[in-house]
Image 1 (tube, rainbow, N blue to C red):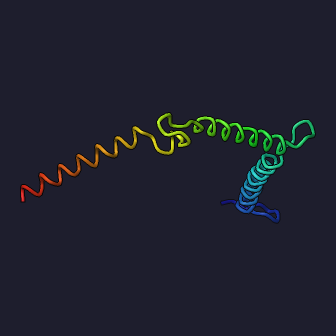
Image 2: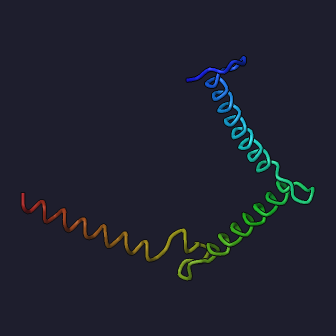
Image 3: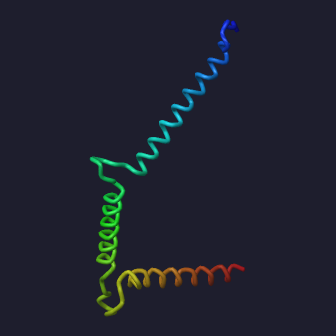
Length: 110
């Protein structure tokens, strides 16, 4: 590596250049992050609008969920369908019956 007659060597200048490039990339990413967190469009902060939109979206999802679950079982007034479904109860009864029969057959094989 050739040395210059000046104060800095070629290698030292190269390392300084790498450092400057690395700092530029770092600051660029920091500025992006800052803008993303505190984004402004037309001079107004976007965080308030994003919060309002997310609150409205969450409220809509909660209302949809409530509407979806707010149905009574016709055979059991006052009991919500999603709480105790007749199909679920019938499935559990059938599975219990099947397990009981299998257990009895396994006991016979012993």
